[in-house]
Amino acid sequence: QVQLVESGGGLVQPGGSLRLSCAASGFTLADYAIGWFRQAPGKERAAVSCISTYDGTTYYSDSVKGRFTISGDNAKSTVYLEMNNLKPEDTAVYYCAAVGGTTAQAMGMVHPEFIDYWGQGTQVTVSS
Image (cartoon, rainbow, N blue to C red; front, side, top):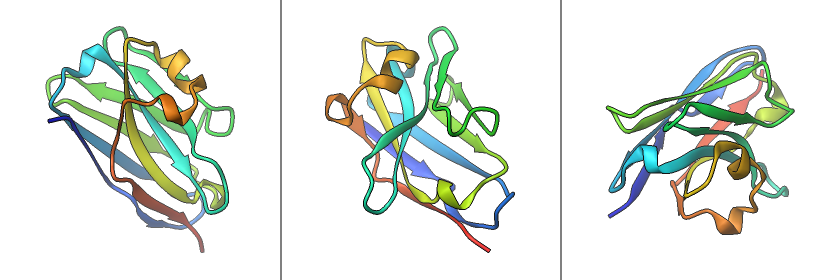
C-alpha cells in the first residue's frame, strides 16, 4: 500500500524557516519523481518543488527559487523541503506527491490530475 505522510508544517513569522518531511512507503523512492504542491484558499493546487532522487535533478517554481531547497534520502525513503525567508504568500496547505516514470522538471509542469499519489497535506501559515 502506497503512503505519503507529510510532517513539519506550522505557524511561522515572515522571514522564518520551516522544514517539511514526506515519508514514503509502499514503493521505491528512486522509481518516482517526488514533489511538493501547495494550495491556498481559492487558488488551484500548483507545484512548488520536485525531485528525482534517481539522478538528483530538481524543479523549483519561480516564486520559491532561492528560498526553498528540496532534497531526498533514498535510505530513509523521505523527501524534505527546506523553506527559508518565508513570506505571507507562502501560506497554504502543502501536499507531497509522487509520479512514476517522469522527471522532476516534467512533474513541475504536470496538471495535478495526473499525479499518481498524494499525501494528506500539512498546513503552513506565515503570519506575524
